[in-house]
Amino acid sequence: GHVPSRMKFLLLQQKYLEYLEDGKVLEALQVLRGELTPLKYNTDRIHVLSGYLMCSHAEDLRAKAEWDGKGANSRCRLLDKLQTYLPPSVMLPPRRLQTLLRQAVELQRDRCLYHNTKLDSSLDSVSLLLDHVCSRSQFPCYTQQILTEHCNEVWFCKFSNNGTKLATGSKDTTVIIWQVDPESHQLKLLRTLEGHAYGVSYLAWSPDDAYLIACGPDDCSELWLWNVQTGELRTKMSQSHEDSLTSVAWNPDGKRFVTGGQRGQFYQCDLDGNLLDSWEGVRVQCLWCVGDGRTVLASDTHQRIRGYNFEDLTDRNIVQEDHPIMSFTVSKNGRLALLNVATQGVHLWDLQDRVLVRKYQGVTQGFYTIHSCFGGHNEDFIASGSEDHKVYIWHRRSELPIAELTGHTRTVNCVSWNPAIPGLMASASDDGTVRVWGPAPFLDTQVVDGLNENCSNMDS
Image 1: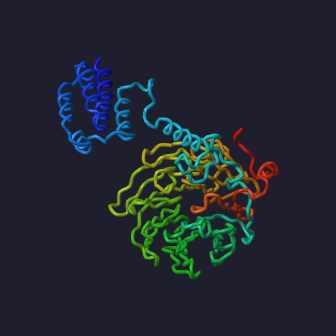
Image 2: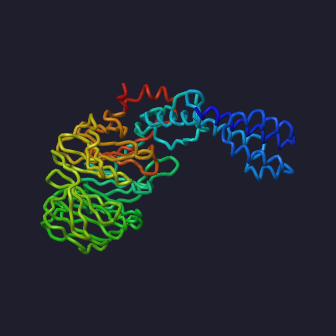
Image 3: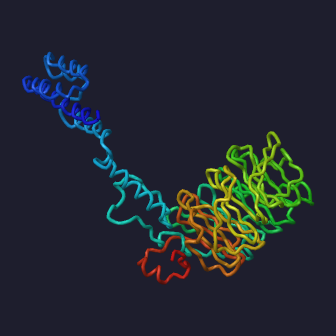
């Protein structure tokens, strides 16, 4: 075959050029006549090579031959060329080991159930001596604070988009805004927003965190839009006393929102509560605005999520479940939806392919409205409240929980993972408390893992 001749030719050509560059013309001539010509390979190229004998100096030679000259560069190039003719079983492809190590590190990270930090994929930052493993003690499994300021069931909790505040809504007619300390991650009460006679069962932060909208339970016909900075009520909106406004979602432009409820209201409004659009006959359970600013996702009483376009007034089916969808939320990139499905639990859907991706196990979900969330670094985790008084955490790719957090004494209605601090999570419960979960305190973590009953480990 031609391959051995081609490889010999490339090697001898390098040898010839290196002799020439060193001014060893006789040795070069010997290679040309005694070794290259007998190969009877690429005679045209041999004529060109023989012409280089006339070059007056090394620069001239390197320019004419378009060659790097003797040394590491040209020899590496030669090696790369030779490699293309060798099967991998004879000689590893270039930087193969580095590639394998990087793949190994990435796989270990993917398999690491508690991996919750940005991991530099450059090999410098990784030990090759030990497999990558995150300890559970760095994960938000430990009660960091119990907030007892509400004096009745707490129905909802949500961190602001920038992660600096937490809003909690309660049956006690108030919303409390908590400030997150950037260093200690402790929460302290910033202000209380009062007067929600029916209680507060849903909250939505505006995209810039300047405003907060509060909704009530089924029999509540009004929605409250608060200025978070000043604590003033900007808008109190009610179209009719017969309405039920139980869910709300902000348009990404921050200038409009959609709201609705199970009695068939579905409105788009501006910040002063003026009605911009109304969609007839949709019994809304939960709402989400897609990033395109046009489409609104609404779960309805027919156990489905449909996409509604308020610009051209078209709608389409996206998700169909066999049981009522009590609530849903969407990942940052808009690709995945997380549903709490009555009597079934937590389901992950791919909105683009419109398929059910995964059913997460363990959680108790009846006909209460329980809110789950994505969270952690890269939104790799899923958390949900449960009627068995626990908070469940799953790795997004795995159906069995990696943690069950105990401490609440009644149904956990809602969980929220801080979008800026991957190790901080909050949960709201009918027991009247909000629990703030963080990593293990800086004790001997072995001891903490032994003592801490908050986290029953599900890996085994």
